[in-house]
Image (cartoon, rainbow, N blue to C red; front, side, top):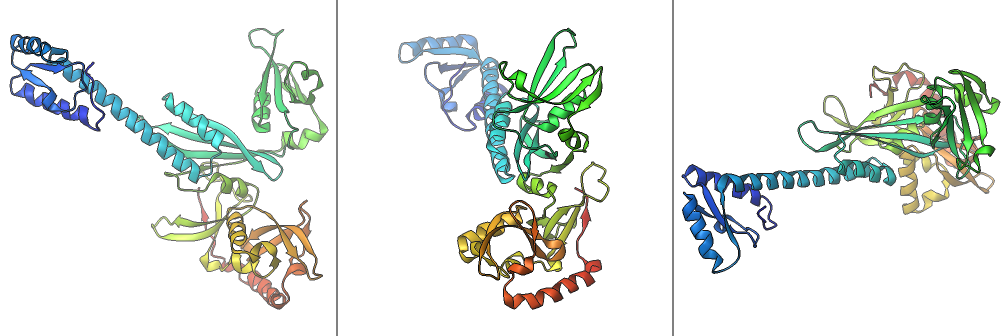
Length: 423
């Protein structure tokens, strides 16, 4: 194959040149096969084979190794190179776009790496499973990437989050499902899972005898596993008492569609699934008008037609100012600009961080804090989850205003400017 210099669009330029020469009646081309072709000046075209071979033979005596080929043959070679270069450029652009979008949506790095490996293999549909921390245990995350039907370009268009009531496992422990082999009833199969949701789904789908357990899956440790549930002839016949609520409770899950890196991030979706509110300042209404709002899932409302929770939004008209609310308390993290900015950002992303708060008695205590835009305030609790009275930590000058504010919110709840939207 002819060698080309590294120049963007060169193969296309040479294709156009050869097409033009063919239209002028030339059918043969001579070039130096030992040197990369840098442009049309490196190609000598002839109308007949004899002239082309004569030119190639004469040039052998001067420099390089010149060869004569039919224009149609060299054209095919350039067309192949142009196609490969376009695909290479497209794949590189696709990977770069995915990296930027995944970073903006807070996709864990190990999931990004796994997705890129499959994209490089040209897999048309990609689903990558991972986990992110939750208040109690881990939350499942699945990202969905699809290749365009017209090109090799990839689109990251959706992710799912799911949460169960399973407790965190010890280090090096996994969920395991031991089941009968369909091919050999006397042989058992072992599958390992990091996700309790996936493990339970797989266990419940079995048709014969099966066991759901936790423990270390090595041969020497398998005998010490903790059995959570068993199945006989496709029917569950035992569930451990401590695991019963987790096993029988429905999984809380939701899907989010994204557009070129825009949408709720994975950390925001995970925090909303745990019942908290998140703030977004980049929202756009169906009429194309930008707006800002706090967002929460409506767990008590029917799901939409896509089996997702609808959102309740609290816009600017609702007059919940997080920074102003935080200033009503003696919070050490709010005393420095850097830590104050970090605290506000985490709370806007739906986290419930632990801060140091000074009470009326002058004592500082570590308390967990959470934004509650529905009622226009923030909640405090002990790190273990026990609620505490916010009034015990309010600055003296704002206590008298707080009572009136609570009454005002109660009176105007019917005038809330939240919206219910389909996700």
